[in-house]
Amino acid sequence: MSTAGTREFDVIIIGAGIIGATMAGLLLKRGCSTPGRVALIADRFMQSPVTGGGPEQGGPAVGRPADWDLRVFALSRASERLLQVCGIWDSLPRQRVNPYQRMRVWDAQSSSHGARSLQFDCADIGEPNLGHIVDGRVLQWQALEAARALGAVPLEAQLSAIVRGEDFISAVLGDGRSLRAKLIIGADGTESKTRQLLDIGAAGHAYHQDALVAHVSTEKPHGDTAWQRFLPGGPLALLPLPDGRSSLVWSMERAQAARLRALEPKDFSEALTAGSDAVLGRCTVTTPIAAFPLQLQYALAYVQSRAVLLGDAAHVVHPLAGQGLNLGLLDCAALAQVLVDCGNARSFGDLKTLRRYERWRRSENFLAGAALDGLERLFANDGILLSTARGVGMGAVQRLPMVKRALARRALGV
Image 1 (cartoon, rainbow, N blue to C red):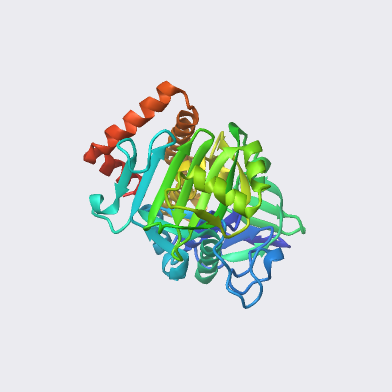
Image 2: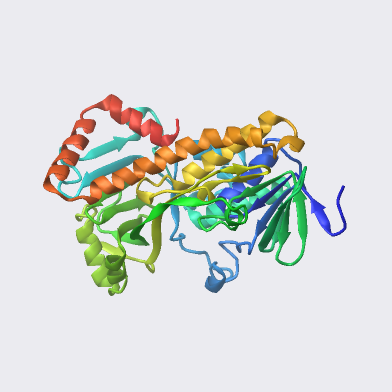
């Protein structure tokens, strides 16, 4: 029974980003809970990306369509299917989703079309594309709208404390409200307050790098191709947008990033053209340039009794392969399956039940993080022997169609 001033739910989700909102929708869509029984808590809910409260509130001016968000995501086929289940995928405006058919990867010491480059094509694996580039702000909004439509209860407040009882767990909010549930899910990002309040430690290391992101126009068409060049300071990726531009994600040492951000747009564009080996001709930056610090981080535990971590609250990886969000969405799918299998909301917080999710996802996420960390270290070393070995290795894979197909299908999640 509810006590005075306490609301009861089956599940309380902390964080209303893409992962938190998707998890809420998935719980309701798969029948783990019912409308009104899943709470979605956030410090502040985003405004509509088309009509919401102006740049200072994180959205465009009222009535004026926004440009693409500087955050874009390369979504795998597995992520696409999960978002379809939640009713998110089909609600995304088509002009904010761009399928890409090809990918080219090459080292700074080789050329994009040379014998030591890697070239992937969806036709080689019998798929319509290799994935989709999606506007991050629009994806977050549609995930939130889908969760609301399915019956999630959005509550705007800060998390203040977590109190665990014998057969419940409570979230105490900054405004004094108390919410009681069978399970709390922390999906509140890299600096997770949920993780801190649960006293779950985290390990990893900073890369001392920033990722510079912007949108650029190019002299040559991108050809619905994702281009990635590995430079000694970090990878440079150009991801195709539907309006002909490309989304830039350029990782580099922090001091260099600061120097490049301080350049005039013309000078930055010249540096980008050189850094991309002019693979798409002259590049011209069309947006402000933002910077995000990069790190490898993993929670020392994913679960406790009646509490679980998802997405960046549990693991953060290097963005060089664009797998961060895809891994988080797989967390959502795995947790939903575990909760479906347990069959009763009263058992959601059982540690034995939650351990199944932890065993399922922790090893996969750790291996993915370690692999991406290893790739970053391998390509960041510009020694002649390693450079030669990298080129020989990529050239060998390029000449092995079965290996290429296996890599492409693995990346797609199929």
